Image 1 (cartoon, chains in turn brown, cyan):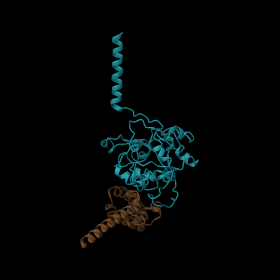
Image 2 (cartoon, rainbow over the protein chains, first blue to last red; image 1 turned 180 degrees about the horizontal axis):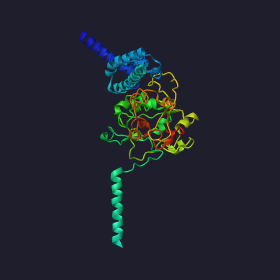
Image 3 (cartoon, rainbow over the protein chains, first blue to last red; image 1 turned 90 degrees about the horizontal axis):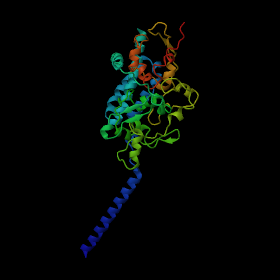
Length: 119
Length: 267
């Protein structure tokens, strides 16, 4: 009699567990929706490197107006970003290292031009 | 009589041969709708797909050069970007726009690459992987170019005037990709002296160039000289794709349109 009770309880628990697992699975799928591309998953608000990248490289239009000290600081910030970008996945690394190279290159170019002006 | 014809033909053949051996074969001038076309085949054929045919004219009518070559990250030389299908699929390079979600000019841009090719997907691949195939495009160059002001070379269009007249509106940023930049302070035009005497000076307009390119697209990769006059430019180098030739042999109006650069009247 006791054995039968245990078995029934065990069966009921297994069924409940399976139901819960299935339900959780279903909810999980609904919550996630379609698998998103890493580009879409990469939320700039969450990624500090991206914030810093946007901040540093959004100033290229104003490069000519910066002092030598400001330009040197921007170059330093670009250099500090590089190791962080190198840790990203292959695609992002390729894109952002290229963009960083252009952005740093411009600041270094303008800095050179300004140093030359003073000579 | 036959002997004379044979000798004459032999002489013509020798003459043509000697001329060609010195100067090479003349390049075929691309037709207006072909100008700026890039064929990309880093991995396509290895994956049993036709190489990608990229038409600059349709893309440049929608975006400035900087959006694609700075923000999206396309190299300035064909094949230099090393684009992989996986990059596109992850939402980079072509996939930055061609993701089946982004809308441009009211149209949803078709998705570029997918791992799973089911039914219609194969047809979609051919929209880009179209080299050597007969694929109908959504855009017709002749229809597109009809209302635009004309020029003599390249695509046969005055792109700058087209924008000024509001006939094209190339976007200067791409949401989620571009960094927000302030508007660029207007730089003064300057004159460059040509090497050949009697040739009109080149009037270089920074304004015209930066409006589509920004700064970092040209400096320092294409123009590295920091002091005016220190770097000498030659037409030979330019025609080989250096300095101005990076764009003016491929996409922007070609070198045959001399007076568009050599524009200062000779005193």
